[in-house]
Image 1 (cartoon, helix red, strand yellow):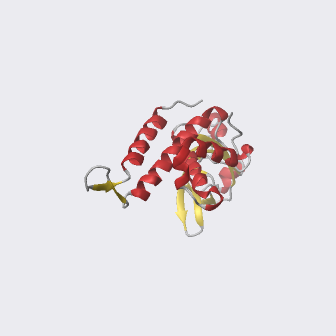
Image 2 (cartoon, helix red, strand yellow):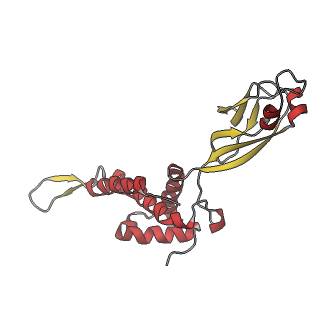
Image 3 (cartoon, one colour):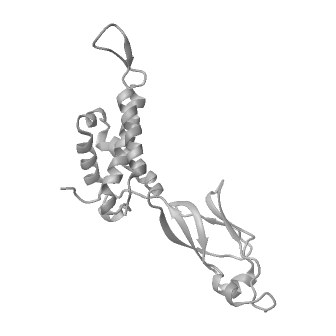
Length: 210
């Protein structure tokens, strides 16, 4: 029976699924398997996107605001939607053009840039709470409550982690020739791992999630 969706339980499942191939990965504290699972979690966004609600405290004429650590891409914002829907351009409380949000990397870090920057009039009419939806990456938590993969998706996550393990095995063995049983020829040992990687990725891409 599978355990919870905690990192430790998922590592146990991944090791068991790799069988003897798990012996290749010898990093302390199961670091290799944790890396495979983290990569699988990031890739899981292709199967089921994760949308979160963020909030910015707007300041008049300020365009740049720190992006959340989990931010992947901007989706949409809710700021001013109701006033825009109810007001007409000739009314005194018409807020004008609302800003577009863009993700930028700056010397100060990852930022959401609002263009044009909100005005003091817009803030007085709409408020300074800029609520928005954004796409975030999936994560594996040390506790099951910190994992964003759903219980029914466990098998697909392990499948993608297996693929990552095969990819690393193929890279590891690319420069390690071995002698074949017949004759004196030798070849790189990455053939099986590389083929398994492709097969597992195809299965992952075809798999359905809840």
